[in-house]
Length: 94
Image (tube, rainbow, N blue to C red):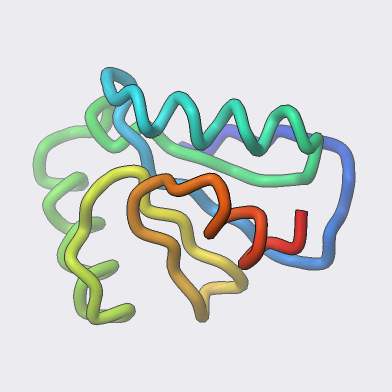
Protein backbone atom coordinates (compact mmCIF):
# COMPACT_ATOMS: atom_id res chain seq x y z
CA UNK A 1 0.00 0.00 0.00
CA UNK A 2 1.63 3.21 -1.21
CA UNK A 3 1.28 6.58 0.48
CA UNK A 4 0.82 9.60 -1.83
CA UNK A 5 2.23 12.99 -0.90
CA UNK A 6 2.96 16.36 -2.43
CA UNK A 7 0.99 18.76 -4.60
CA UNK A 8 3.29 19.90 -7.40
CA UNK A 9 3.19 17.80 -10.56
CA UNK A 10 6.70 17.84 -12.03
CA UNK A 11 5.74 15.51 -14.88
CA UNK A 12 7.49 12.50 -13.40
CA UNK A 13 6.09 9.45 -11.64
CA UNK A 14 8.25 9.19 -8.52
CA UNK A 15 8.06 6.11 -6.32
CA UNK A 16 10.31 5.63 -3.29
CA UNK A 17 10.92 2.28 -1.62
CA UNK A 18 12.12 3.04 1.89
CA UNK A 19 12.71 1.60 5.34
CA UNK A 20 10.95 3.26 8.27
CA UNK A 21 14.13 2.96 10.38
CA UNK A 22 16.58 4.35 7.79
CA UNK A 23 18.05 7.84 8.23
CA UNK A 24 18.89 8.18 4.52
CA UNK A 25 15.30 7.21 3.67
CA UNK A 26 13.96 9.83 6.07
CA UNK A 27 16.20 12.48 4.49
CA UNK A 28 15.13 11.47 0.98
CA UNK A 29 11.43 11.64 1.85
CA UNK A 30 11.94 14.98 3.61
CA UNK A 31 13.76 16.32 0.54
CA UNK A 32 10.74 15.39 -1.61
CA UNK A 33 8.32 16.85 0.94
CA UNK A 34 10.29 20.11 1.06
CA UNK A 35 10.06 20.38 -2.74
CA UNK A 36 6.29 19.63 -2.52
CA UNK A 37 6.45 17.50 -5.67
CA UNK A 38 4.03 14.61 -6.06
CA UNK A 39 5.46 11.24 -5.10
CA UNK A 40 4.45 7.97 -3.58
CA UNK A 41 6.34 5.79 -1.17
CA UNK A 42 6.17 2.53 0.69
CA UNK A 43 7.99 1.34 3.79
CA UNK A 44 9.26 -2.03 2.62
CA UNK A 45 10.00 -3.13 6.20
CA UNK A 46 6.30 -2.81 7.05
CA UNK A 47 4.99 -5.25 4.44
CA UNK A 48 4.93 -9.05 4.86
CA UNK A 49 8.33 -10.71 4.40
CA UNK A 50 7.27 -12.57 1.20
CA UNK A 51 6.03 -9.32 -0.35
CA UNK A 52 9.27 -7.55 0.57
CA UNK A 53 11.39 -10.30 -1.03
CA UNK A 54 9.24 -10.25 -4.18
CA UNK A 55 9.46 -6.43 -4.48
CA UNK A 56 13.25 -6.49 -4.05
CA UNK A 57 13.65 -9.26 -6.65
CA UNK A 58 11.45 -7.45 -9.19
CA UNK A 59 13.28 -4.13 -8.72
CA UNK A 60 16.70 -5.75 -9.01
CA UNK A 61 15.70 -7.65 -12.17
CA UNK A 62 14.00 -4.69 -13.85
CA UNK A 63 16.62 -2.00 -13.17
CA UNK A 64 19.72 -4.21 -12.85
CA UNK A 65 20.70 -2.28 -9.73
CA UNK A 66 21.34 -3.70 -6.28
CA UNK A 67 18.46 -2.82 -3.98
CA UNK A 68 19.59 -0.56 -1.16
CA UNK A 69 17.36 2.00 0.46
CA UNK A 70 16.06 4.47 -0.39
CA UNK A 71 15.37 3.11 -3.88
CA UNK A 72 13.59 5.65 -6.06
CA UNK A 73 12.06 4.82 -9.44
CA UNK A 74 11.27 7.59 -11.92
CA UNK A 75 8.64 6.96 -14.61
CA UNK A 76 9.33 3.25 -14.07
CA UNK A 77 12.45 3.72 -16.27
CA UNK A 78 15.19 5.35 -14.20
CA UNK A 79 16.36 4.62 -10.69
CA UNK A 80 18.15 6.47 -7.90
CA UNK A 81 19.82 4.19 -5.35
CA UNK A 82 20.62 5.64 -1.93
CA UNK A 83 20.24 9.31 -1.15
CA UNK A 84 22.70 11.91 -2.41
CA UNK A 85 20.75 15.17 -2.47
CA UNK A 86 22.63 16.61 -5.46
CA UNK A 87 21.90 13.49 -7.56
CA UNK A 88 18.23 13.60 -6.65
CA UNK A 89 18.00 17.35 -7.43
CA UNK A 90 19.61 16.88 -10.82
CA UNK A 91 17.76 13.70 -11.85
CA UNK A 92 14.36 14.97 -10.71
CA UNK A 93 14.95 18.53 -11.93
CA UNK A 94 14.23 20.08 -8.51
